[in-house]
Length: 63
Image (cartoon, rainbow, N blue to C red; front, side, top):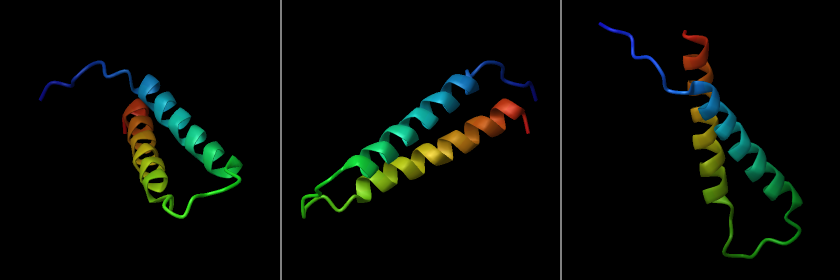
């Protein structure tokens, strides 16, 4: 099977890392949380970005 070239895995890894950093910093600096904001969506975003980061780094390393 032919190997698919391209994909810009370094850019995707950097984007996922930036999303993780942004969300973690935003959670750390939040002084007041509203009762309706329980943070599940932020944890979901961080989790998905973390999976994307790991996958991109594995593809970048060509494992």
